[in-house]
Amino acid sequence: MTHDHDHDHAPITNGDEPPAAARAGALESLLVEKGVIRPETVRENVDWLVSRTSADGARLVARAWVDAEFKQRLLADARAAAVEVGLSPGPAPVLVAVENTERVHHLVVCTLCSCYPRGLLGPPPAWYKSLPYRSRAVADPRGVLEEFGVHVGDDVEVRVLDSTAEMRYLVLPRRPPGTERMTEEELTSLVTRDSMIGVAQPAAPATVG
Image 1 (cartoon, rainbow, N blue to C red):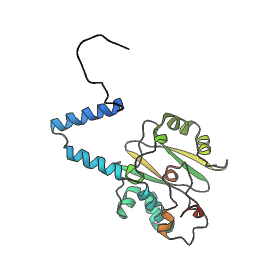
Image 2 (cartoon, helix red, strand yellow; image 1 turned 135 degrees about the vertical axis):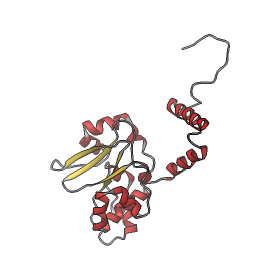
Image 3 (cartoon, one colour; image 1 turned 45 degrees about the vertical axis):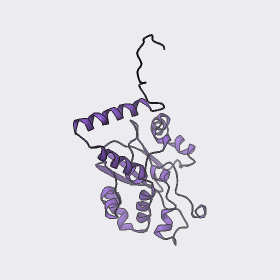
Image 4 (cartoon, rainbow, N blue to C red; image 1 turned 30 degrees about the vertical axis):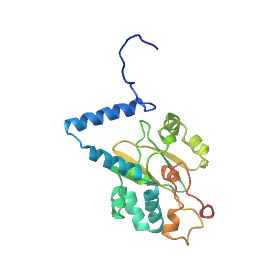
């Protein structure tokens, strides 16, 4: 589309910046100008967000694998359990931990956007935010799991959990066999981000190192 006029103007987006990012930047500038927020607060929160990794979530899982009482506290109140071991669970009011068993496998999705326990898992992967995953995880969860390399038997119930701004989910995957003599720290290295979303199994002991 072309238009004929003499005046110069800046593009609606800045280079490759998505329109949503431009709108967010404009909103931030307005809130700062109005005194609602401080630029320092914005930077601090962004720095906190980008510094998060899945290592904190892995610590929770490994602790639950070795401590049955802690696992029950984690399943009862995941936010409180995270705080108990000195971790920041993030801003979501409710954090729910769910346990995969021989009979039940959980799969987490956010059908509306990309709500996700960033405080414990870090930024969500691109595929988690994609429309194909957000739609197919609900319509064909077993097919999605197969594409990720996870085979779930017909006798296993697949439960799809839809995250929201108020409620985030953390999957407690099944502890791999042959790890009975591993320390909590060693077990932490087996827990992957994707296993805490439900699209993967933890790493096998032989693959670590």
